[in-house]
Amino acid sequence: MNTDQKQKIEELLQPLLENDKYFIADVKVSLSRVNSKVTVLLDSDEGITIDECTEISRKLGKELDEIMPDKYTLEVSSPGIDFPLKSERMYRKNIGRNLKVILKDGKEVKGKLEGLANQEITLIEDKKRTGKAKNDPIEPINISLENIKEAQVIISFK
Image: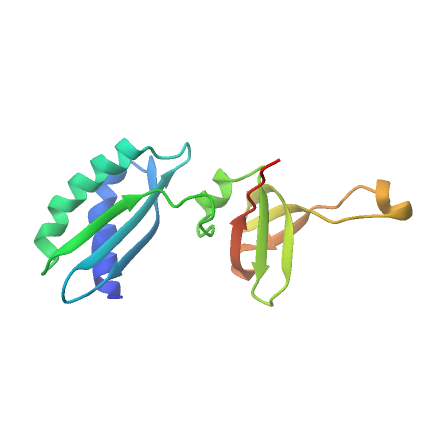
């Protein structure tokens, strides 16, 4: 992917984000001789509707026509619940949900996201406890965002 094009698309998006009502979750550009594809994933603290994605897509499409040299397909959508959390705003939006966090050292931690402060998330770890420790309070753990390789919301159908 051409990072210059990705950066240019992000710049074109900024005025369309309505004073930070929306935020960019991801931008992908797949170049091809036949038909390139631009995928833009947007979200907001309250979520984003199909109509909002359509409106931004129309506006962005007009801008892209000027910078994309060949035929392209533009897709603007929300990231979906299974999309990895990549920014503080995405973590903040998911406070109260259960996460699976993979650390850069390979360790996996699952638990409820309790908060975010000072570039750290606070998780209440999901541990099975037995015996005398069963009634002991679970201590929250703090994980620096820079130590996280990937974090995803755990989808529960309970």
